[in-house]
Length: 277
Image 1 (cartoon, one colour):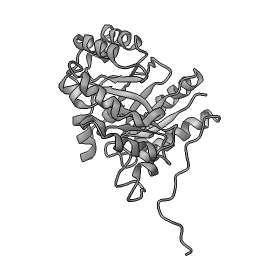
Image 2: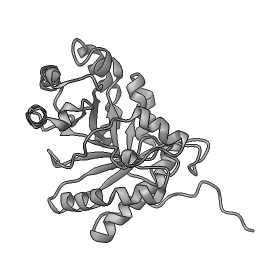
Image 3: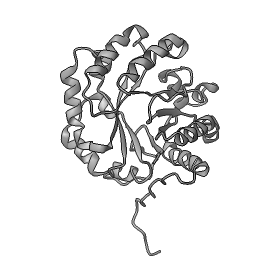
Image 4: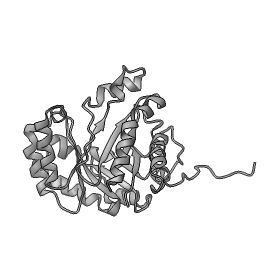
């Protein structure tokens, strides 16, 4: 059965209704996937990852980013020990480990594809891999894009697009939007899935209406993917992510209105105990 997973770039935010402890457990009652960005800054301990697994159901999806020492500092070369230590650390996730996310720096160009090909060829099987590139040539040069797709196809890896089209559709109107303009990649929108498990990162605006209007194409794309038997994962971002949790659920509901047999999201658990008055 095809499944739509939705989530955010984090599992905690000051604006979200969450208890003081076990915020991931609370988050997992709203969404069924999450981007694990914290692993980019360092490999977590096995006990930490085990606590993540304990707070989430078996069908919850983590898309776990590899450490920056592997992707950005070593540029995928001479980093076998660090990468395997990372894979060992995330073993407690078990089936929750949906994809190992290889986010590459903007300087990683089409001429560097040999390093990616070698890295993926040597990477242990048993994991699903997904690659995010930010060099504009991959989005503007069909030859570069085709070469990347061939490298990914050899190991059945997915290409993760970061759709910033809505963000850059008009000038920023807030500090959060200006900050996102400075940090997020400005690349062409990509709609091609390579595997049965496409992953899309979508960022909108401060305005909920603009964010929702901008994802219309993505709703149609997800409906198509589901009809093809694919199981996509969509991550919803906004410049400050304050509304991302509700937007993720809204996106799922919008797709479910078109695909009524879509498995539902969990029902959020109240963060405060009920009162008598």
